[in-house]
Figure (tube, rainbow, N blue to C red):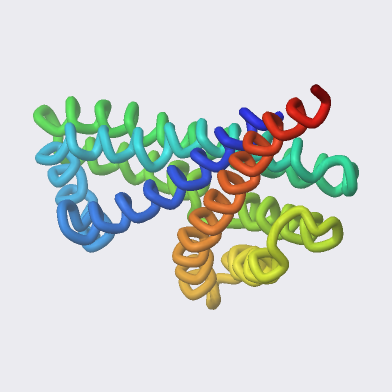
Length: 229
């Protein structure tokens, strides 16, 4: 269990780093969101295909894999005192991980398809991308409902059991609610911003706490063995 907690802490820190890397990339390197015209957007993908492929692996595919580890580590840590709630929370966490991984793979394969098509027919490539992009957005975070429910339920369970710092749990409830309101069109942008930026802080805080607990347990084991001897 201690090894899983340590891996969970590392995974949480990776999630935060992935968020930051993604934000910096799409502000400094490729302004994907700022391009509205579909033909220009496909041209942008073609010009930056290798970089877009790599960043998608980092912030979607590997992010989702790390999320599986973190969800299972939190489940193991909190399930004893809140079994029903943590079972539900972990289900949402694993579903979210699957959606994120799937969205990343869809983006990568879709990008390869439209880039190959662009040289023959730019207009058709743009049309194909118009069909792919909403699927990618829908699975990958256009609406943050699934991920926010995971954060909300984990925070609620930890608040009841004392399994995580109390302030961290209240903070998790806030960003969980922020993610849920992304289902409301007029509040979606605000909710997504609060959820995304809040998650960076939440993941860092959570990762540090899990690593500290893991180190504490490791340090206690030699003392317990000495006491027995």
